[in-house]
Amino acid sequence: MAKESSFDVVSSVDMQEVDNAYQQAKKEIAQRYDLKDSGADIQLDKAKKTMTVSAPSDFVAKQVIDVIGSKVIKRGIDFNAVKWGDPVAATGGTVRRTATIIDGIDKETAGKINKDIKALKLKCKVQIEGDQLRVSSASRDTLQEVIAFLKGQDYGQPLQYVNYR
Image (tube, rainbow, N blue to C red; front, side, top):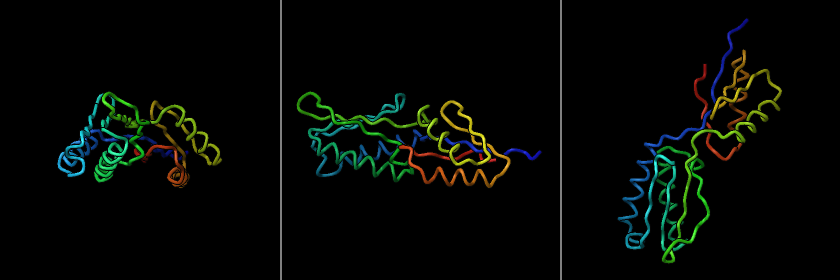
């Protein structure tokens, strides 16, 4: 019997790169003439994997989010990994928006990916292992087809394909 090949489907974000993007965005907000004295502020909580923007208006908050987005993309992080919540009114007429940084595949998304791969009717096995999926098959061509299929789908978060062997 041929040795089985496999790969893992993961969704991971390098928090150090997120921190670097945060530092660059904070510096740009402090120096940009239209945001300098606006009262806009951002905080990053690495442990909770959240980013919070406080601004005097929703318009300024959107400008700050655009700055953060450009820095995140320049650092090589998919912007889909940062999910922004709705604006929330804060004290003093300010607006607060919180973003969560997606790290790992939740059970619902993993189940959907599993179901979609099985619908392809290819000879491969899919196992959900915590916050990642392992796809294995005797044929490497089958694995390549699965990767090509998954790259064409949108699951609301970036996916990486690692440990291909």
